[in-house]
Length: 212
Image (cartoon, rainbow, N blue to C red; front, side, top):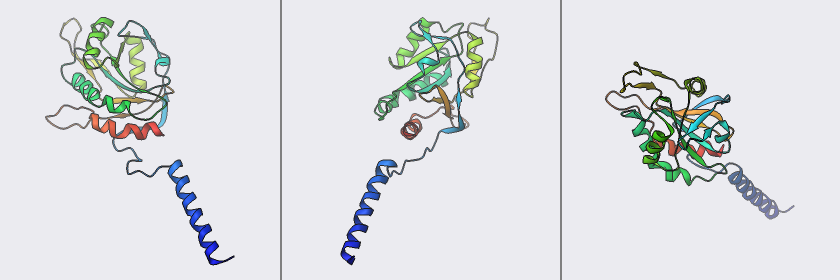
């Protein structure tokens, strides 16, 4: 076989190899997550029964077939909750543009069922975006669900006080289309700043997460 033929075969083999590599694992400077804390294994969620802002049942079935960003909070939260939802609102149009078979959804999981009625949740969540979902339910449903997501909440004072506060985690949980928790975006804790999960960091990592 002539050197020319050998050279041509090697060249075409190289071209085919590059094409295959690009299609199987596209070259990208952003092919790894930078900010999300991924769990070693996906965590399945046990059955739960909540109610959304439209007074409709919300179960794990509503998480299947979607990528979900879930935030634990409540509508009377004075700072972290509205700021976090504002961050999500700002990046939501870009999140919607991510190429995927499973659309992304934002879910506020209210841990203050005494005050956060469906009507209250509806008014609150629509202030940020009409696509966002807000849900709540009895503490017997909320406690195990929040724990399964790797989060926490507690009543910091008696609920007899109409202005009581609720302590809660400030991370944003990532749930895959199989209704499994795979990780969370944890805010940085800096003295003098609210611990907020930044929207741009979520936007940077979600295309990578959703492609895997």
